[in-house]
Amino acid sequence: MTATLQGISSMATRQVLTELAQTHSQRSGLKVQVESVGGVDAAKRVAAGEPFDFVVLAADAIEKLAAGGQVVAGSRVDLVDSGVAVAVRAGAPRPDISSEEALKRAVLAARNVGYSTGPSGVALVKLFERWGIAQDLQGRLAQAPPGVPVGALVARGEVALGFQQLSELIHLEGITVVGPMPMAVQINTVFAGALCAASRQPDAVRALLAFMASPDAAAAKRRNGMEPA
Image 1 (cartoon, rainbow, N blue to C red):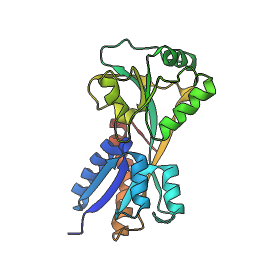
Image 2 (image 1 turned 30 degrees about the vertical axis):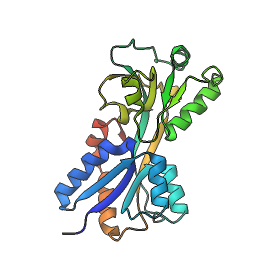
Image 3 (image 1 turned 60 degrees about the vertical axis):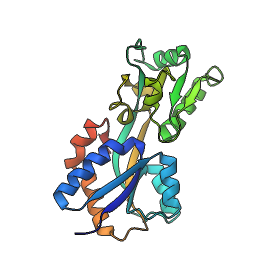
Image 4 (image 1 turned 180 degrees about the vertical axis):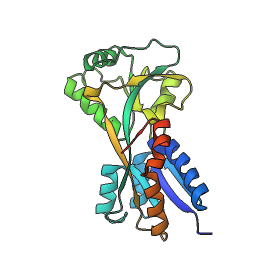
């Protein structure tokens, strides 16, 4: 049997990659292991030359690794489109987030607001700046540590209103997912896979990524709160 394929990803794709890796292993007989950590840490480890076969990160992070030569140029495969949802602690009142204005009011009314270290968190802070409420939120923004779900802070009552990709919220206990951000301000991130330059099994990686991008993988993506890219 061929050696195990070793991958690394950000936390946002942990659930869906676990499911797809298992399906591919059953079909191909090739074992696939994916380590999921904070996206910033994952990119740093690939950039440092750790011997992974493939990496799954936000598309812009993949492009940076390609520019640095840590992933093979032209090997990027877009896998999922991931949107941000809003959560409160289980049993807490559900705020109105049905429109941009309603969401803005909910944010201003919240005791504090949790967000992630990933690309969606960066985009959320920019949205607050565009709304002109960044100053009002000073001291009330709580960034989850890398690799820690925002929903975990919400479940513990440390954060009143949490923003994170739906894929990272739907499997957590102790929270209520109020819904996705309104379309007018929805934050979408495309996550892509790529072949690491350190891999000694490039053909096997390309076959894996092709499966993960295929129509056969669509149902698993939707079950895990994402859409095919």
